[in-house]
View 1 (cartoon, helix red, strand yellow):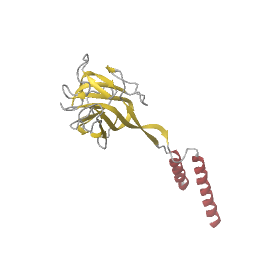
View 2: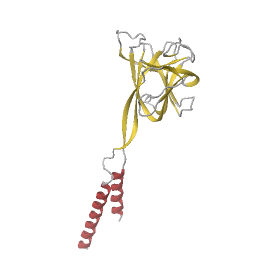
View 3: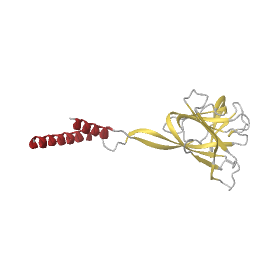
View 4: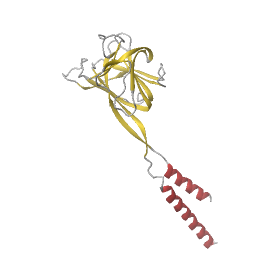
Length: 231
C-alpha cells in the first residue's frame, strides 16, 4: 500500500504540475499629445499609466506634467510651455513613474536625446500610492545605441539603451526612471518588460493523470500476484 501511495503521489505531482509561460513585451512610449498630468493608451497588455514628478533619491515630491512626443516621454513644469521637455536634473530632479497594474520584470529601457555624460536613476515602488521606493539604484549607465550624426550630443536621434541585469533587473508593478544630476537630460523612448501571461506550460497535461494512475495500479496488482504465487 505504501508503494501505491508513493506511485500515485508521484503521478499526481508530474501530471498536475503547472509551469507558467513568460512573455516579453516592448512598449513604445513615443507619440503625440504634448503634456498632461498622466498618459495611458500605449497599446500595451497592461493599461500602463505614466506620470511625472519631482524627486529626491526616488522620494516623490511635487507633480509635473508628463509629455509624450515623437521621441518619447519627458517631463515639464505644470503651466510652462518653455521649460526643458526632457527628464532632467537641471532644476528639481525629475522622474517618470510607470504603473503597470500587475507585477512585471523590467528588462531594458531605451532613451532618446542622450549624451555621453547621461546616466539614470531606477526605483521600484510598493504600490501606486507609494511616494518612497522600496528599492533604488542611482547612476546607472546608458550605453550608446544609434546616432544620426555620429555624435552623442543630446539630439532627438541620439538613442541609448540599458539592458538590466541583477540586481537592477527589478520585479514590481510600479517603477520610476529619472535623472538626478544637473548634466542628466533625456527622454524615455521605450521600455521592455517580461511577465507571467497565465498560460500553463506543464510538460504532462492533466488528462494524463488517469493513465499514470492506471499504470500504477496495474503494477501493484502484478506485484501482488507474484507474491501470492511465490508464497
